[in-house]
Image (cartoon, each protein chain N blue to C red):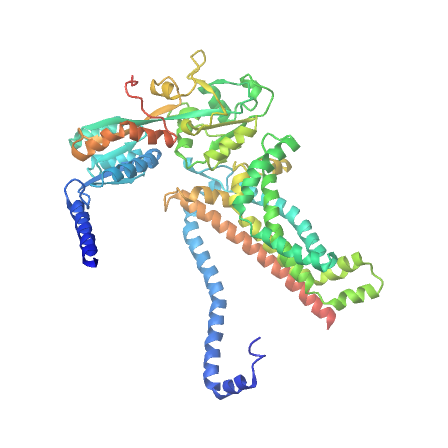
Length: 294
Length: 314
């Protein structure tokens, strides 16, 4: 009886071993993917890598941040397989790539949109980029100046170390002009979390805040934004971000050196698929709608 | 306790092994000595580390910018003055709340409350001291700051005042607990003498007991202040963190950014060795120097009072 049981046990163990060694799911990873770049993308890239490695134990992906420039430089030096970037490759970087004999291939892997939010009772529902810049730089201090009630404006922002803060500074406060050195007004409240901003906007009718589109709860009022006076005011949504009519949005990229092959190609294909794009939504970014690219 | 209550047999045994006991005692003495010195050594090491990481800020950032009025590190503005004033306003406000309430509560518990009430109140106050400050911060952000905004008709409730109220609450248990111990330690005979001379209970408390416990009460206030100025999480959640120069009277009801909140919010992401990193350590150095100053001044005051009291008595 006992021998029979131990025999069964041993055979189970043996089967376990053989299945571990068998080719379909090898134990030690034999494919390594190095992935470095944008700090905006780093959490998303980590989430992707984790999920992908669960499904494909034969692939080991290492993800690190450092900034878009760092990632692209590493790609040109051949130290990474995939570079993450929150901006397109710059002309001088492309030239460098040519000099290295590399043809970077671009993939739009997700989109990032910032929604401007106010209290639901605030009558102001639309602003131009210029008005937003004036509000955040301290030139407009009362809601009546932008067609609202006579109330002081309380500006809310994420902390300076957040990628969202930096992007908002460039695109909204500085209107995307590289020679513009406008700063946030000093009395801008810098809140350490998305939660903090949402909380204050929810209970304070004076407040204006911004956050990644995916983090905005439905009970707050989002502002429709126009690029300039006389242009259409657009509310942020997955559709308006994907057709690029909403002005405070950007694409997030991954670059490979030349056309990707093998494991890198499989990984990028997976990233553009439905399962990976669901993760995008969970992390506050906007998923890519296939076929909606202009 | 055990040593004094030792049985004759145990005492005889100890006497029989006298050399060994001396040896053990020597080790214990050394150990106690070592832990005493280690406090000094640790403070010294911490200060050394702060100076090593913070002083480069003086070289990397021009002095005029370092003591400028704008803090916006990602664009190279490292003015620490708004943060300094922010911390001072919040801590000052907290002490204005916590000192009178703290000493009052301590006097009530020690002098007025009946014995059973005292046995309930003191542990309760100490329990309050064990409350995590993040929890208080949550209450502050969800209840206190919206309430303050409506009550005082402010643009926002995330202000220095909200921070002061929370910090007052955080410093209060420390002050109550230590001040009550000090008041409790005043000999019964002082109170009896004052009452016998015809003083009312209030006169006894205010004119005799409190002055007699002065140094302990002052220690309580200082420890409470230390707790307040070093508190980070609750403050970061409710003060709004806007690096505004807080020098007007209205600053108490405006958002401010404290030194501790700045370090906590920015240290996680800063590149090690960058000017920003050194500037953050420089702020840490300032905090250290401030608490050192507070302690030195306090011990000087206590020492002067004690020596005067000794002169009067002798």
